[in-house]
Length: 431
Image 1 (cartoon, rainbow, N blue to C red):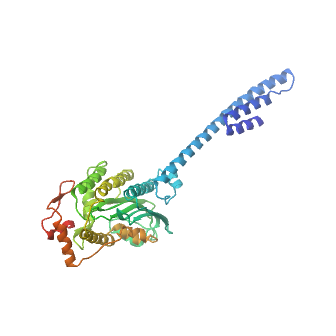
Image 2 (cartoon, rainbow, N blue to C red):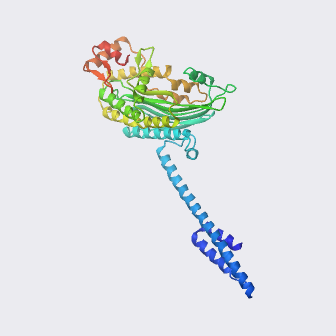
Image 3 (tube, rainbow, N blue to C red):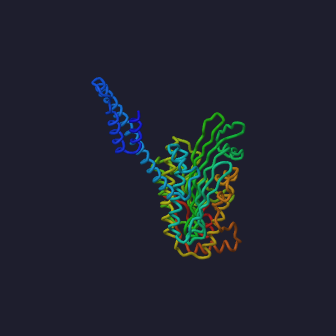
């Protein structure tokens, strides 16, 4: 038994120690009492002991190998975690170790995706505006969860660019539940309570130059547990462009990139979600569309959770390539004070839509414990909601004199607008 214990201790240390311990065991077993019978018994005992020692040695070697494999796996995990930390703007809300422990669960994969998307977009924007930097702010929600807000302000290229991640959970407010039921959700509460989890990445980018369009994207996942324990889940999101000036080349590039991302999964998705986007970003009280669209979808829960997740992942990966080339093309364009004034008016329309119609803004404001600053991150630093008639006429006249007569065509070659007279310019974003 002493030899066996020594063998196991040696196995835990290293193979050379294991060999020395086995040798010590053989020497100890070799001291048998004198006499033939005793010698025979000693030989038999030695053979049995050596066999046992060999078995224990094999067991010890296997234990050592497992320990070495565990150490190698741990080192690999640490390297992977360090790589993820470099790609993220801040530690994940749920904790990196916890996400990796549950990495096969879709909720963990979605949180990792939105964290990676935030990092990718922030790095791409910072590279375009090296004189500015993102301020990173992490926050917690006492009811459950939290978020990471990244905002760049007063740069040379971007007046304001925000990229936010939020992961919140707890009990759905009655107001938020009513909003969802109005969209056809059948939510069965238990004692008036609906446990939920919602996570997403959202961004609005307002450039300084009027010839660089504003861009917005949002991708999110929602999960609700009903009274009987079943869970409803769905995805939502989209990417859209709001230019101050219409540029056909930019419109084609933007829509083409999004179409390619959709087409990887189903050729029917782009036309379906493009139309949804056109209909959604409509300012009813103005009779105007907010911009030139993109894609938009919500409450998507088929064909399967994995398939929808892969689609959302493709869309998120398309954000940087659909927008950054447009910024590079126009960020150094010259512009006049009149053009800047027109940008302020168009931004006013952007503010109106976000505060009056946007679902994400409404849900955030109706969720107890939400961070208001992050919800209103989409608002520009400067905007104008009205102009005096003479100022508006001066802007429209100045713009018309500087623009050729043309027809703008989107990716599918569907006419978007025709500029024929100054009075028609106001209908640039109208239906």
